[in-house]
Image (tube, rainbow, N blue to C red; front, side):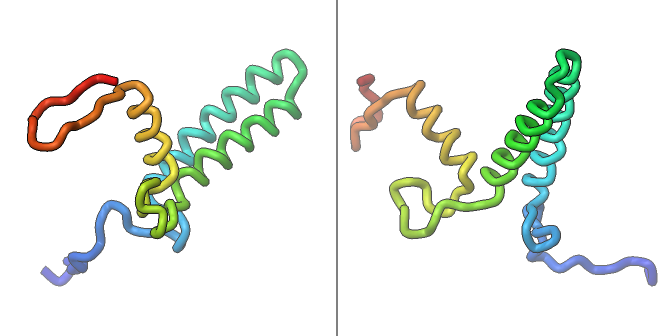
Length: 111
């Protein structure tokens, strides 16, 4: 029993690491780094390594930024409190499924 350490209940899966990254952003960083290394490897075969490095850094930077910064709290209609990738995901879903939900009818009408 002496080797057990109690964990405070307020810690969750989105515990902040290094005060900037969440666990989700670290996973996205690792996956996008793998994609960037693969792209750099492919472009090095045709002697375009500098282009591959720049493209890889751009992919990693954009994907991590989209998982770190939330939408400001005063933009309620634009997804306040969500991170940027969730807002982009919602916009893509809305573009594919365009429905008008009519109150008190239990049905939806297509546009």
